[in-house]
Length: 55
Image (cartoon, rainbow, N blue to C red; front, side, top):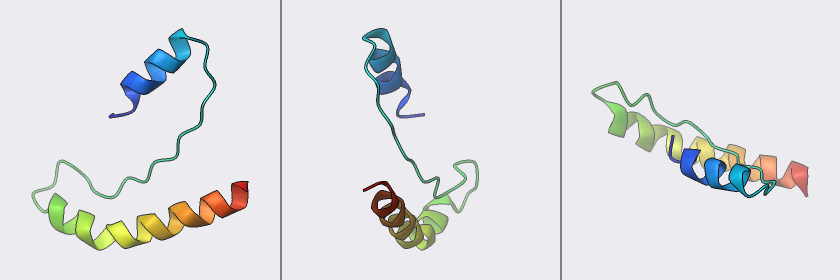
């Protein structure tokens, strides 16, 4: 959701780009903040692994 504006601007200027996001919580749940705290570390680990694959 947050990247839509960036994607729209990049597209309108013909700029190629890549973005990786990790969804760490279901924003509709009442315990979203607790879920985010639990999943934050896992997201960081997966993101670093993905970057290493690309380099």
